[in-house]
Image (cartoon, rainbow, N blue to C red; front, side, top):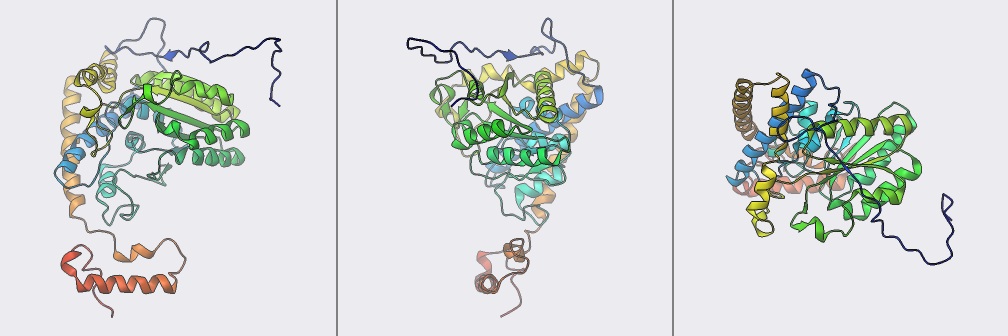
Length: 394
């Protein structure tokens, strides 16, 4: 049985969906001017500058921390470079009480919501002030106060979790929604399809935002799916969908603002496909020269989303060359100084290895912990950061 009445035919009729051509929503040209007939969203100066500062913060943080990884200070890092508009533009269109469930390239959303450079660094270095107590890889951020669910490494698990969380928001009736970010590679996981089907059937206030950046690590989009991107999949679940120029900050903001209204006011889940490009490597462990050309990258560098927004701000007389120079200098200084402080902080106390799971540490776990401390005391030179915590006891 289907949920709608279908037309009856008397000879075989096959369709492949080619008749559905999804347009790409754009507002802002690369030179900072609006397209003809395009109307800029209602974005005041204060919010526009908040967005731009978050974009610059993310770009500089990414540059500096990748360099730190290359110097051996960090074990791992992932950049948002080239995708700042898709992430920050959409996050800015939300209410700060809406839940964000990210993949691993959405540090810009945290920067926009006010996550400090100190908080970024504490997580990256896993020191005693890290909210995750050193249990996560670098870039696996989380913030309860900013409604940003802690990132987990398994690909696409956040997508069905977002549907479930949004179902709870619907039941609570507080007027909030959930947005979940993922790449087009994650959209090939079963979690994606289960999440969209559940969201459509139960009509929950969730926004699925796919960052289609062209590559699932080294696999180009053309080798991932034969269809016209990810957006047409929404039709299979009778879900509203929009495709957006992911490097256009104004279009991303407006599309997400409209999607949020549909989700919150009518409990209609929405799929947004943001067409962008990952200018950086997939991670610090990746070398993109093995699967794409420098010429291809150069074409997309000309479409830099940060430059596009800067030119728009300048056209509005909201930004200047001097403002840019001062922001860049101040941010680079803050990132470097904060990194040095974070590196010097000690690791989380050894006892945190067995906390946060049980109300009281069970005897078996306590016994294992004592054995661990004895082992560290026996070989202190092998565990220099933990030796001080392991002193005392049998």
